[in-house]
Length: 438
Length: 197
Image 1 (tube, helix red, strand yellow):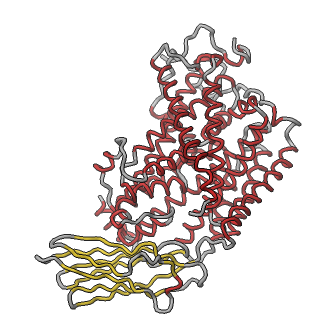
Image 2 (cartoon, rainbow over the protein chains, first blue to last red; image 1 turned 60 degrees about the horizontal axis):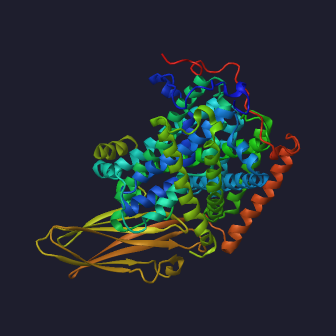
Image 3 (cartoon, rainbow over the protein chains, first blue to last red; image 1 turned 45 degrees about the vertical axis):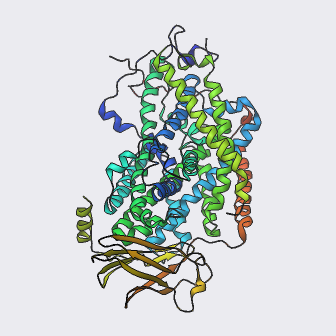
């Protein structure tokens, strides 16, 4: 019997793992899968755009495959946390509390630091875009306005409306980037070749590791169960759990796929504009400026609009997940329209906006942010793996008795291997570079 | 598709390109110079030059980037990067070159600068005027450690603020105890407990 009682798992003891079929999803129901766009917002921010730009400038499309290979690992990480939630009705934060209180303290620090710095860098990007369109507008004003809009949207407290907003934002930014890239020329044949895993040339490992750090991070393990709690995606019946898992997998699969889709036009633009001249853009804004001489004003404008939407949705996503995580740490209800949630959102908005007025280069905060994530992500990944590998996962336990079960084990192990590579090999062993002058 | 978009959008909304896109001819050599006309301070300017040789013989050309008079110190441009590029363009070929990484410094006030790109082939020379405007960009003086320390201090201070705020609603010791399982929804979406057909 499951340790939380039959009420919680609702499964019949004799049901073999991974043997039930989910209810088929009608095509129109796919349109209702909206949380994936929230997941996508975590990926598609200034970091994703900078990485895509560098990849395109150095290697053209030849690292495009890395988004999808790393995406498998990201998908598996989310899947682990969702299976845990469905089995026990608890979020992964409960797992960390069970391990040791010190981990909770570390998670608290990581949530506050990473949410503050992660969102600040997005508001800084929004401010740069506003300055690009209206050079006379102070940078601080543009960024603060973007942050204020985000806060207003979140304080309105309607979670369903928020998801629809993110869907609209994601589709719009994809179209903007795509149109911008089409204006400079997109070689579809070369892009297709970029889907084949390959070694493109010197320096590719650093970009791969950066991409891994962007796609695979600790928030992945946390965020999706929060959205499930918000939407009431939980059941005490096994068939219900199977149905929810099926829908959730398509949902966050879309979210991860979106990161790879957005990367294509960004790589194309960098490949066409920067690569022929041996230029490697230093930041997310450099490419937009390079577009203008070769493809005209509208190419730059569309790119800037796409960049603004990517940064804004990412900033809002950071606040949302950070606030959810804090409520979870203190065992408060996971609800967007609750008073503690609103207080958390306001508290996050203050430092991440005030840092704009200090006009500090976001690069430095991102170093601290990256160090925190690279330290915590491997630990969280291993903790999650050890937990979901236990037999009390019931129907969702590891099993080699079926192809589905074996595939899940492979995906989980692959995810942790990538997490360790990115977090330990690239993060821990290079941690001292934070303090080394570049 | 690219051509349609490139043609249609400027027609739909006429808007001047805020960039230098100067084309010309130097003997049998066709040239084009591209560069942005505005940039943030501390963000690189890249000047792109495209040379096409339509003659039956190779063409040798020197391309020089001329900095604004008396304002060279307003920019960071490493000494190992060339200011004059000598290019030999084979017959019928197109060659691209760039003066990359010209970085406006933070200290001077935002202003317009008068660069020049000079192209010389045999005994002929063409000068392309290149005005570029700088606007204020992200900046924080005080060194790397201040840039690391101040935000870190803000984050630590805000951890205290969150602790004070959360203490108001959380029961003592909640941070150490796993939360109770999520409530089973009384009216979930109909597809959740639907059996497959």
